[in-house]
Image 1 (spheres, helix red, strand yellow):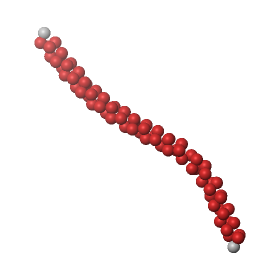
Image 2 (cartoon, rainbow, N blue to C red; image 1 turned 90 degrees about the horizontal axis):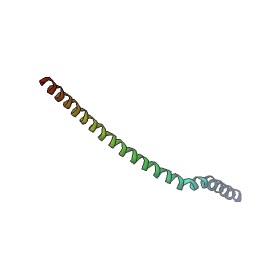
Image 3 (cartoon, rainbow, N blue to C red; image 1 turned 180 degrees about the vertical axis):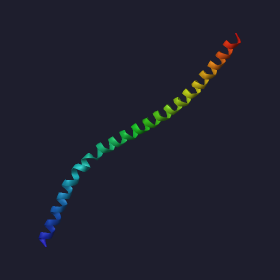
Image 4 (cartoon, rainbow, N blue to C red; image 1 turned 45 degrees about the vertical axis):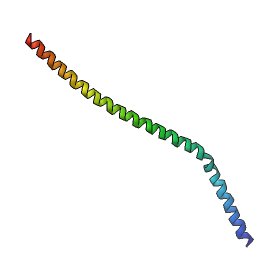
Length: 78
């Protein structure tokens, strides 16, 4: 009977010793996870901004083409 109790206690001590380093790292892992979430949010914002700039570029390109066409028409009239 005492042998069983000793083995159970030994197993619990080994388990506690194995879990301790993992529990000690949890705060650092939490901070790292928060940092990654912030970076993901920033990346998504940058991606949205890039899409907006791409749309603006297309608009400016169309305006430039229209301006060139009008300039060519003006030159033809002269």
